[in-house]
Amino acid sequence: EKEKEIKQEYSQTCDWIKKRLGEKVARVDISNRLSSSPCVLVAAKFGWSANMERLMRAQSMGDMSSLDFMRSRKVFEINPEHEIIKGLNAACRANPDDPEALKAVDILFETSMISSGFTPDNPAELSGKIYEMMSTAMASKWASHAQPAEMNLQRDSPVSSEPIEAEVIEPELVDDSQKK
Image (cartoon, rainbow, N blue to C red; front, side):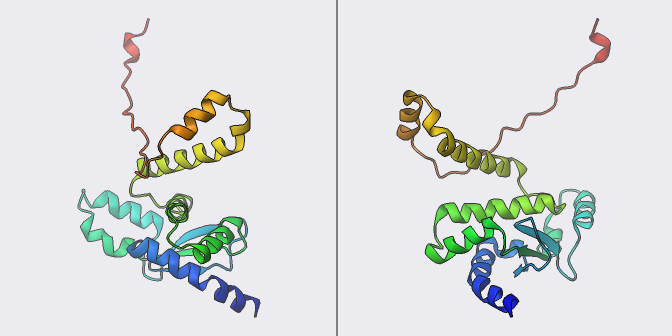
């Protein structure tokens, strides 16, 4: 009976997350197996596992269009006992169009891809989103310890809604024979 209540309470949130993620997932379900993680991404009944997807991606030789159908056969399971999911449930009910809540759904999905063994479509963009979130969290947590000039600079700077991408640096080859 408790399970039924939870499903009813989170059904709107599941629909909201599914709408946001679109074709990236087959469906969004309430998990009954998660205990400490907010969510997990699992292969649907006939979908590819993370290892199979990696193998097929390597074999596709750049033609990802043939893989799109099977790649979208994933189920996003959420843990209704986790604080992040409780927060998203509240955000969904209060203001489903809130850009911060929608960004949180995106980050949650992409990080669950990594923790479930899948590869995010754009790792640099994900890194940028995580850095931006960390910057916001750190600024609010330690703003009282910042110098007044730094605080004015933060308040006066315009906030961009464009996604930030992490800088990608190519590794440099080092020739050990050149060293003395």
